[in-house]
Image (cartoon, rainbow, N blue to C red):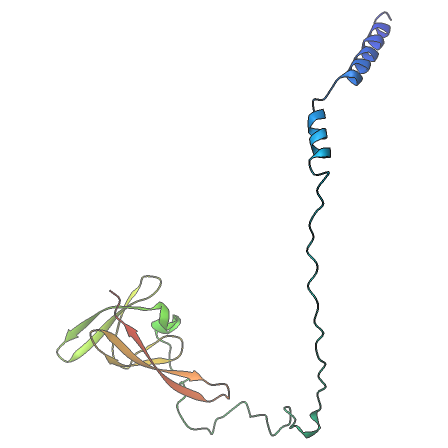
Length: 172
């Protein structure tokens, strides 16, 4: 019973003394208050908004882009020209885009020429004329010591197939 009163007095004394202490930030408060008191921020005016002319679309004399005469059928089974063979088994080099393949050399035995191709995963393949490579059904037409000439089949916007020449040069 003797201890509660002295403890209470000591606690009140600590609280009174803490109110008299200084946190040491008076100079910082003065600097923040006075540093930019005489300066006003410079704000640039907003750019002038130009009014756009309105355009009225009048389709009375124009053809309807969605008319059935403007739409082409999706299947062109009767269309001639080149097209990829859907029944042909894909070769390993057709899994990679042509620009990711590297020609690293050639092999010759008599008149037979093979090209050595390195895939992006590091696997090395031997190809010859007539083999396919690239993702656009590219068929090898000619192999020289410096490059491989191919013919790729690319589907155009209207659905027809177009032959495009491509080549793969020897990497040094």
